[in-house]
Image (cartoon, rainbow, N blue to C red; front, side, top):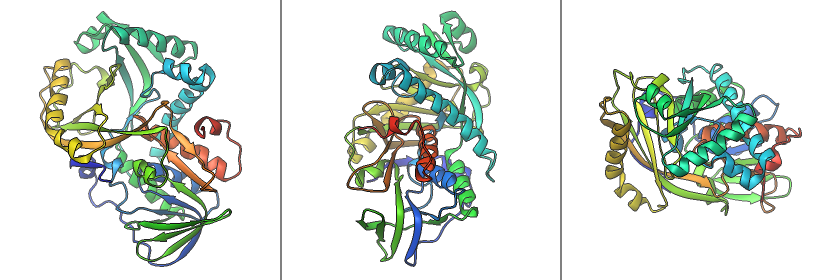
Length: 399
């Protein structure tokens, strides 16, 4: 599966990233993590301090797949609006999930301060505006739940939005303590930290076969070696679906532009994250070197040629949509990407187990909050593997 195409921004921000060898021998471990992206990195980080032998394999290079095009808006609200999650799961579970996402932002902030790279973590507020009349109603529904559960949220009316941003929208949620990050640096930093804690990491090591038993799994690599392990974590992003098809998961195509550096953000209040209630939606954020990331326009396209054929028109459309909000900020697309994007039908990520894969754990950190979800699930998984109870596990290991 070719997950993405285009001119990619994040790898240009880290010169000479760490590299790791390919596996050249038969080995044994307690936990094998399949996948060298952000999900695998967070699992490796959490598992590196509990006395287990942990191995990570990736068929390519670390952080060079979906992580390299992750737009890394770190938010506690997701694709499915909060009131929709309440309708699907009940208020208690929907709020639990949202609180866990809120805590994950704090976890990522704390962890980012312990790695060797400046991963450009910065707390940002979010403007979540109503795109239409229906959006106004939905914003009000979400605000009611946010307010009653003490989230840092407020409603902005048309005049307040215009005062801050100089564009016209009827209503918006203003959310505090979301964030942004450089996912490429963060993932490399996590793996380097995990490596120093004894995690063995292998690049260019493709899984070519497996022998799954009740108490152990033997993984065979394409270059003829084996890994015998007690536990397997499938954290290969969207390619996890090639190991196990999950009916709740859905792939689509998404598009992103990264602009030239901008000198003046005068009309962009506090450089907040911005997104909207429309589906498909458009979102935007800034970067530490003053670029603007504009993305969205998701479509139900799973054919690579169809996806790639639209990248130029989508690039122009995203720039035009940005100019509608900020006509005084002149931008050009320096980088642009078309990529597959994963979500779930019910709106929550999953940490799944299946009868045919005993002692395997499948991370489906799918949705627009992939980094937040990956941290949340990796933290739960640490407790599960170390035989500690975690009250949230059943919410994500659902049928």
